[in-house]
Amino acid sequence: MLLELTEMAAAPMWFSIAQKPAGDALLAFSRQAAANVVFSCDDLQEVNTPKVVGLYEPAEALTKLLRNTRFLTYMDVSGRYIVVANATAIKTEFQAEIPAKQ
Image 1: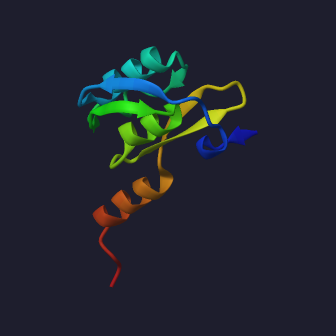
Image 2: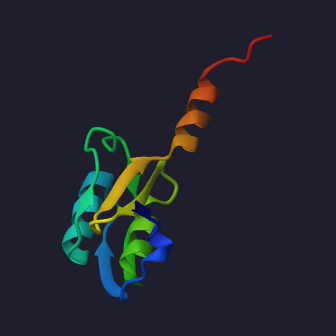
């Protein structure tokens, strides 16, 4: 059973995460939110995230970190945030690389 982030509201907290590589940003998020975040360092190697500074619910802060990337997040039943590649974004990337048959 997976829980959508929008279904799980938490108290807003202060985040101060600089613009940086996604892996580093997710580790900063994990420390600041005192939350477990599962992600693949290899998949996120070339991804950078924007800065997130302000008072946000953890799910909102995490969504802001991953905005404009091909990654999304969900919360599993144990309360961990799981970061995965967005299948729609990947499909679009591959379609752009494969020429259409004529």
